[in-house]
Length: 79
Image (cartoon, rainbow, N blue to C red):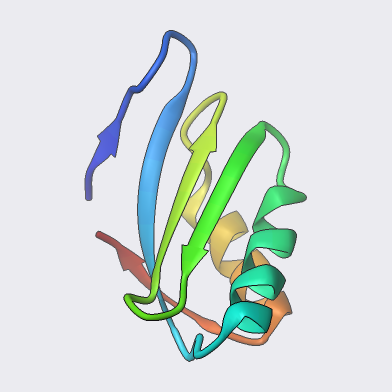
């Protein structure tokens, strides 16, 4: 489990999500995660299954899992 601090006050985390296969999948996952409080950006890449999230503070893993589930995919864990 790794988290990097890019700029003062922000945390970047990379998650592995299974089941994404296209741009629509990326949009669904990004849209749900971006609704979480404190999230400033989300970039999902279907080809790698990686979702990079920048937030004001570290996110609760269960909140991220719930958002990914809501989008119809499975959170494997942090990269």
